[in-house]
Amino acid sequence: MESKRLQEIVADHGKDPAQLLAILQDIQQEENYLPKETLKELARELGVPLARIYSLATFFSSFSLEPRGKHICTVCLGTACHVRGAPRLVDQVERDFAIKAGETTADRQLTLETVNCVGACALGPLVILDGEYHGNMNTAKLGRVLGSLKKE
Amino acid sequence: MTESQSREVTFKVDGRSLRGRQGESLLEALRRYGYQVPSLCHHEAVSPYGACRLCLVEVQKGKRRKLTTSCNYPLMEGIEVFLDTEQVVSNRRVVLQLLLAQAPAAERVRQLAAEYGVNDTPFEVEDPENRCINCGLCARVCKEVVGVEAIGFSGRGAGKRMVAPYDETAEDCIGCGACVFVCPTDCIGMSETGGIRTIERWHRKLPLKTCSVCGRHFAPTFQLNKFAEWTGLPRGHFDKCPDCR
Image 1: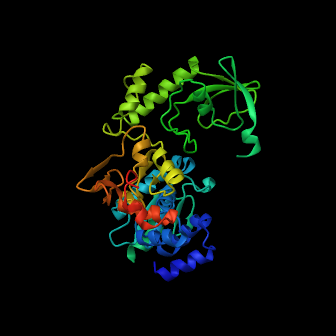
Image 2 (image 1 turned 180 degrees about the horizontal axis):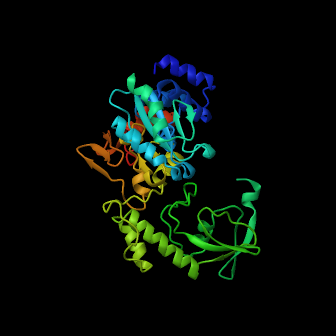
Image 3 (image 1 turned 120 degrees about the horizontal axis):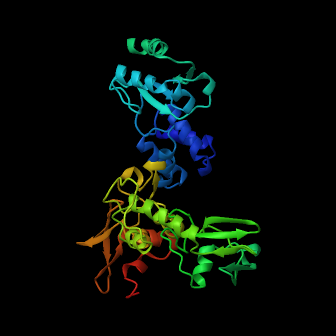
């Protein structure tokens, strides 16, 4: 991220160290992940030790310190989704795209992530593709949803 | 200190009536009266954290009696404390078994465990070489006493580790060695060779300053520059070692 853009984001939050979490979310929103150089610059900009930023960034699984794909596929593995077969959906994506959960394809097209419950248990098993929720998932439906990505 | 903290209160320990300050750490009050309560993660210079779970005691407040860590239990009027009850001892043994599984190479953990008759652990040992118990005392001292905060926890749950950012060189570290000094399990490591001080765990290497009078190495130059910055004292003040000043 360019220094100028980072300064804008920091200014939007009143240059307030208490807004660190929101600032990290904004950075990730634009960059898809939290680049190391940007976090180091943020530490200087906010006057917050890098150790504190790193702690926070590694604590929340919604933050990524590695570059992620253009598309992000999140499979819910909460209890309700789990018992309705969500692990099979993870297996399917892992096999079809030759990545493990948490990894990104070599062409940076797709990142596969798992979460432990998104609070929509009635829709389980649930897959979130690029922020869009797909409920009552099964392998056939997932194949159709992800099929469009494969062609790209 | 606020008024409520300085207020004197009366509490009981195994039936003996004692006095202390409202809100102070129960563990510190107990130790002041000479009671031996084991703990690894507590230091009176920093805020209590309750990480090692060894300073367990039973506290009765009104009708309720519960097991609690004493380091972060605020002293209050009328509480009754029971040390080394059957429940305390059996729970402390489990804590020691867990600590043994987490940090099997930590001498101090092994010693304490042996004192409680715990010589092996039923829990899975992940890393037989590990000595760190994730108590965070190093980071609390770095933040609260030194005022630097060069290190911190990464991750959470089973993946939680105390590291320098990115597990690379801790660039904010001034090499004071306070973390090395307080670490209860001696898992940080510091050495000085050829005029360089190394804090091993934080991958920090800093050249040492030579005293302009006696000529011995006494502190990292980086640290002395920080001191000059913080105190506003002239830089020349830090050219001499504390003995020659």
